[in-house]
Image (cartoon, rainbow, N blue to C red; front, side, top):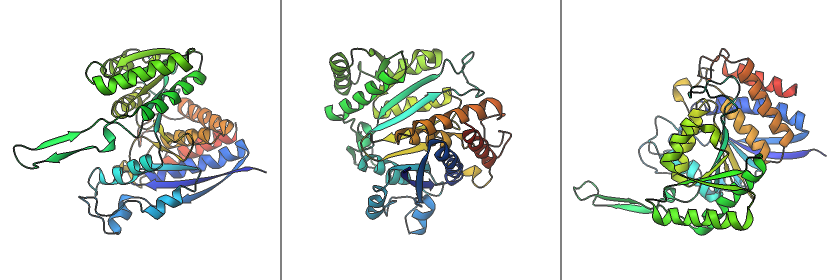
Length: 364
């Protein structure tokens, strides 16, 4: 009897529904290759719905996702997200109301961001090719500055005070580090894990990360080589020598920054995908490029990041054969078909790119 996976689909805002539609097209082909069945259900968690239900465009007045809707999501095996962000809704309302709420309430404590340069994708770094850009960033996803701890006093006066607390726990740091060590151990023969932080200035949080990193590594992962970069040095080396890196592990804020840098190294937001992962629970996968509202409805947006996110989703569900087929299909399309990764310049429409990848998967 075929395995059946239940996937919650959140198209979201702007071009999100368009790129997700192409991912689902590829999913159909991948299921045939991998020998599994699947069910999908659409959830309309978007800026449009938020406003239609009476939400204020300037302040979070109603929930973006209701408690009962969150309970429904928890019955699925994975979440496939298109994009979050509506120009008619102030920044932060949808992001906190949907993305951060799901990350925290579903305990998706790992943000996983592969940085891989596909064949045919132009790299902005002179002389660098696919052999030079192939690493992964493991970002702690539920602690740090993103917990919302802190506050404001005397707002609007000359004495206004604002604080944002970087909160880390040994539990949160250790489980992120162990995930990264395990991933590094099985990725390839290089087996080098680089911790990125700012221990020379952030001496409290940095010390916790650094001590836990070395204690865990020495005790349980002696086969994995340990390396450390200050975050500013990492930014320099990622541009100068991206081939140096294998697996990077870092905290929430630093991870948010260096993963976008990594996305540009691999050719731009149109090809970058990520996962918000609970290794023992419900995970969510998405393209990184945002909702791109100016391209909505024009059939111009590049869907490859969403398709790459689908490959990550399949891998997390244990469908390695299907995930590998999708990865190879993406590489085939970038290497032999597309003129550019940019919206409207690919040489194909959004739907045609989805067709090309689906056909390549079916022929795997």
